[in-house]
Length: 261
Image 1 (tube, one colour):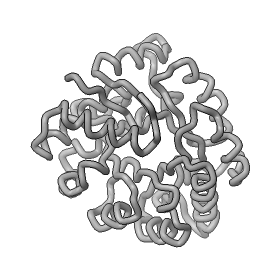
Image 2 (cartoon, helix red, strand yellow; image 1 turned 60 degrees about the horizontal axis):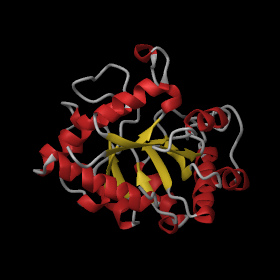
Image 3 (cartoon, helix red, strand yellow; image 1 turned 90 degrees about the vertical axis):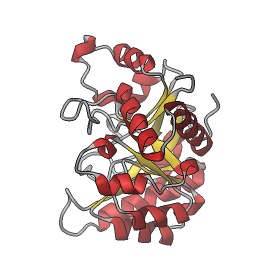
Image 4 (cartoon, helix red, strand yellow; image 1 turned 135 degrees about the vertical axis):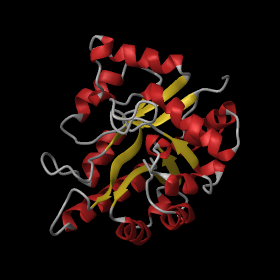
């Protein structure tokens, strides 16, 4: 394979590294053996963010985002000003992950919606795209994106696992759709149907590691090297060569996140 792959969403500070003797370099080397040339390490909370940033700073092939996951209940609540301040580090290419998740949260979720609004505003102010997480909240996610003019920010619906209607609404707002290892799962035919419809120039691939390892490693800790299996499944679904999927999704990543490689 001549074109390299990008893992557009991973959590490198949360990887299971025991098989690499605790070394992040081992996971990076393993990814390189599968021709993974770039990784986006995604923030979940502001408490872990400084250590995450410093962990990956030595690696030019790793970029980061800054944001607070919609399920995080403890710790610092992000403000627009704080996110904007942190986003001006040269390593930061995105805001998030943010969004709505009604699967793990109950009760009055205005706090979650307000947090999403904060991230959208920070994204617009910094001109750095959004990484959006949505689960059991497809209608509210799209409605809030429209109301807050998220199209002015742009970004990606990460680890997409919703229906075609939701994908189309996001595409209409200028967003990209990213597929994870879920697309390889035997019970994910509906998602594979979506993957066959998304325009190739708006598609990304990811691992969301250490979660959601693709077949043939389902149930094991995930890592960036395994984005290769996501690419192989997309190639199969779309009738493309693996090189073509690598080139298309890498070009899409570089264009969306304004990465020069």
